[in-house]
Image 1 (cartoon, helix red, strand yellow):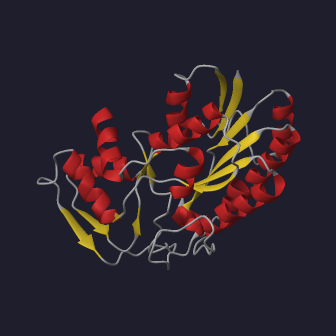
Image 2: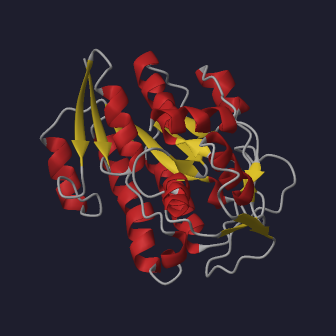
Image 3: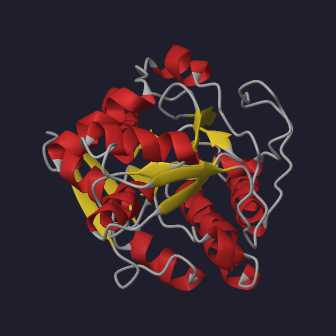
Length: 283
């Protein structure tokens, strides 16, 4: 039986993993909230792992507020980089395979075609820089790792773009959505399936991988697809804007090429609009 630790289990990806792993045979799972395990506390992490015998650690804990990270740089790096370093060191010590979630924001967005895993990284904001530092710590500290970069994550759980749009629609709010950025909305349930598949198959082709749903769009395209899928497109007041002021700079183009993951790990890929409908129909 494979023993799995999931950190950050109260987050949307953690909740998606909980749903899927609870229906997966031959695994024993420990779903740790921050109260259960503060991964920024190295001594606490060492003691926690010493008291268990994990085979896999899925790190979904992260500082994800892109705007606040600009003014809370220390906190962002503590959670996204230093805590990842703590996990990498302890996973190496206890021979645990580390699955870590990173982001498309490690790129600067100047490319015009989907980013490959080997493309140069150059984050344009603190959040991206902190996630990249976490990647670097893991790559140098723990050989048995999967770093999965993903993008524009949403699900039926928690605070995300999908749930915000649905809430605004219920409140009859007029919405102006930016076309300034192009990326790929990604269903966190699909990402959870990828992580579970890696564990179930015992795949050992470690390294950095990209995973998102397929296709691309702007945030306006994402909002429009949400309201089309809910049948509210004719009742919602939705307009687009080319300019939307934000404190943190964002990559203009952050679509990722996921063929390495499909080839090496045998993972199927789904169009983002198809996957979006699946989440909305399940709500």
